[in-house]
Amino acid sequence: MIILERKKPVKLFLLEALLRRWQESERDYGYFRELYLQMKKGYEGELKLDREWKELIIPTEYYLFHHFETENTYGHSHQIDTLFICPNFLWLLEIKNSSGRIDFQMERNQLIRTRFDGTTESLRNPIDQAERHIRFLKGKLEKLNMHLPLVYSIVIADATIIGPVSNAISVFHLGGLQSKLNALYRQYPKKLSSQQMEQLKDELVKMQNPTKWSPQMDVRKIKKGALCKQCEYQTVMYYKKGRFICPKCNFKDKETFIEALHDYALLIKPWITNAEFSRFFNIHPKTAYELIKKLPLQQKGEKRGRIYIIPENILDWKRRLR
Image 1 (cartoon, rainbow, N blue to C red):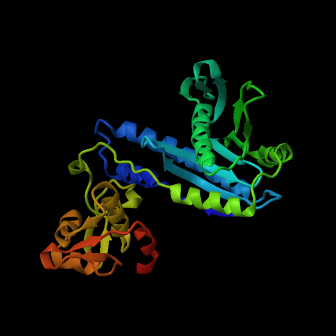
Image 2 (tube, one colour):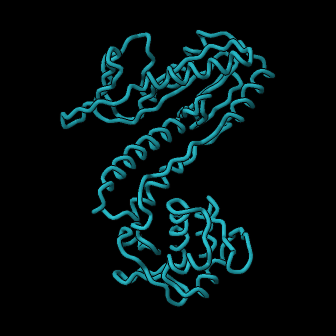
Image 3 (tube, rainbow, N blue to C red):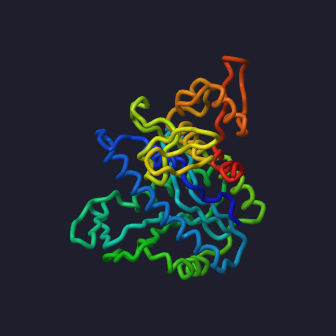
């Protein structure tokens, strides 16, 4: 049973919004773009593995937590790609989606990636990350008086060549997920009752605490308004007769302001006033009010002090305006 579905990370949404609205000439644009590409590739690898779970034969009851996030007592984050819990063992999976060749250098605590063009880069060793998570989870199980084996694997989601790895370390391509799962069931007998499984599941649900990330930037420098997706978000659109129109390609759209409002919530703040809406989209305050009333925005305050809360799922409302 999937307890925690994998959702597109808010940080990825935020980086997409930032790249749409941050000037390429700005100093940090390259850094944000590289961070976005890395995170996007990692997320795509996680989705590949999620699809594999649907076809697996699993002989016992189980719980799956995708993209599990929590904090330890020091306020430091633990972000686990996938957590599999069954009566026999707890299995932590770190997913990597790097192409080329990877070599684990345990004595230096690093991972060397060699791209197809021959260039190399040093990456943080995912084994260190997994072992840190295991130590944290072991402490939690001890407090619950549960004696459950904790194991981890590094799963490679791309067509990557894996260099020599010690037999003591579990590293494999995602196609080997069923084989590894079978081996773990053969290795570990049942340890937890159904009641204990339920208790552990509930404890992990309570621990779930997604981290928040805010880029260091001057929000005054972001592009304002509805941006034309046909022009790759390079052109600011104007509003006329119920639609936003691109002055460059003449693309017309009734919904584009919703995506822009989502960007506003991510990059500026999760609420907006009528005056701020008017300025951001460069439209008359009365028109701003008419557009706002079309959306399911929670209101707080009265008259000039009224604010409108922008919900996280506001993008779901695009299809309702068609």
